[in-house]
Length: 567
Image (cartoon, rainbow, N blue to C red; front, side, top):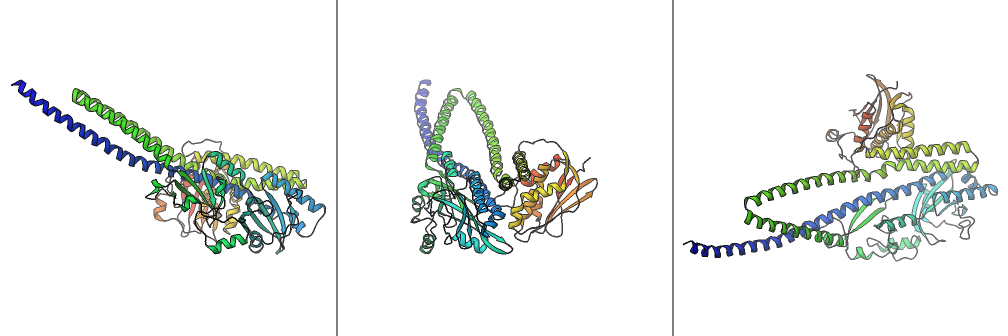
């Protein structure tokens, strides 16, 4: 009887084995299909994140370089020697001004700086001693000259008519007594920046509002386009000699549809995923991240993991057959270990993502001090040329202070993850207000903002640089909220043993929803904001033994900076 049962068990066991084998093969096939899909999607998302972070950092560096030359040209437009040359003073005055432009061009790394009269004739130039000097050349036909003469300022990217090298021309109008005297021009070439891009191994380029590639890590792409241009637009560019006789053809990658954004359904079939960052001068920065190699590597890694997992499951299945309860216990224990490791990885990934978001804001936070450093450096050069060593020393001391301030600002941006400590001293609120207005001077002028300063002063317990950062953040928020006609009222009051610096504006104010999440990390109403400015500002005020709170004025927005008075 037992022999018959044993014989009956053999077919049953064979059938069970076939069923298990079939189920295993189906599981393997399904696992590969499912894992490949997940790996492709994850690879595309990771490529998109890398592109976004790279675009933020590279755009910030490009804008900082651009702002440095823009500010230098603005300072030169106020130069007394330039006005004297335009007024007809020649001889020694003209030679000295040529030397000044030559020294400034070398210090700043500008390709050329030159002065034009109202007819476009070059009177002085940094390359005055070179065979290819601009002196005596007439650039009245250039759009940047005509626009600067009529509107006060202009910027144009074009090929040089003498050097045949591409560069950005930044032009500013010079006036005296309401009369237009001429135009000062700085030409900026981005060879060093492009070399850094190539060294970093990134595929990146900047385009103007028409989609023409101007600055690029790939030299062959210059003056190609990312979109077709209309015939009238091409004709105008050829007439203006912007890009020489280049045909302005669409870059084959874009012509053939090999570039897409991460959100596209067919992005996995594209050669590149594109991240685009809007720049302040109507340019766009494009970062292209290769997708195919990334996908292949991710799929290969995924399949290796799947095979390892399937082998582990197969071994676990055999163990379950032969060891039953013991194998089941081991499987549960292994699963718990895997879940714990996965949880730890997710926590670490979240931390890295947060630090990445903070890092992308560093360029913006230090951009304004860098612009001020550029202005003081330019002034110092002018004072040294005049022999005014005391004034030059004062400007250079300010540069040293601003450089130290940049380090402090960088530390504060990292303070969200790692708190910094400092020395609390007696600080003058008037000096803090003056420093904030200096950093924001360009933005205030651009928006025609009106600042109402307090007449009185007060000494408080704080760190001057960090307190100034809080005030800059609050005033910058007021400028971001307004369009034109911005008014900011600063007032100092004594309240319950505290000194209160109030920052109020005439903007749209804070909605109920915004007020509820005002001091929450990463909560922002700005399109490109990180949502950390008010959080960091509140932490700084707490370190001083004070606080930062939002007031509820009938119109606009207001913030109260409560500080302890100096002992």
